[in-house]
Image (cartoon, rainbow, N blue to C red; front, top):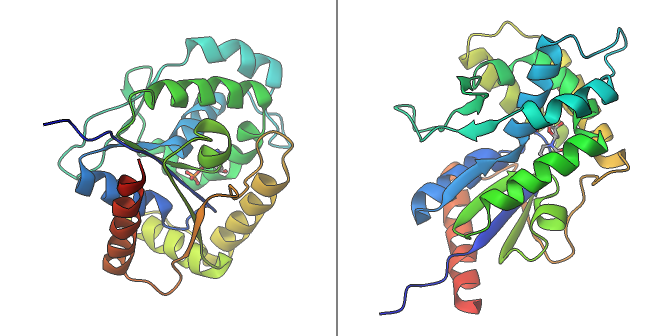
Length: 234
Ligand code: DC
């Protein structure tokens, strides 16, 4: 019996739109590999913070960052007891450290640096070479995998997304202020949408999903239906 071709699936959308959870659950249900491309931008940002590569205005030193890129190795560990794979930066588990508000506040200018984008897009394309992958991010359907078999664009209002992020951070034990989280979500939307290099854009052939009022189970069912339809097409 011929083995079914494995799809390449791109899930793009705004920050905290729930796309990572969706993408991870779809990967688990289909046996595909899940890659969180945002974690890769966060890992580079953590490195820049730890090595003093930001100026007082929070802008990265582009030259120093570009010089450091060839020395950064970003991997993902297999899923652990918590069912999540952890991001590894040069062999160290940085999964917790890359999710702090400090990293969230510095990541957008790093993700706007062309050298960073080129390096990470190349790594992401290499990870997806064999298909059988669900990758989430901002430019997966437009730049990383423009020929993906299934492209989903996820959206929800900024307030809904900030509420989710706030709940997540509280659950992780972070002391945060809701208005600060909302301001960060809105500021990241703005930077992600207006940067020159690969701005957050919906691919013209993406399927839209506004999940503001959907339960995780409804999202899973919706996604599985789109997955089956895409499988029929290849
Ligand atoms: O999805 P996230 O919030 O963890 O992403 C972190 C940052 O990285 C966010 O500001 C947008 C940026 N990003 C990007 O520019 N391109 C991607 N493919 C993924 C994330």
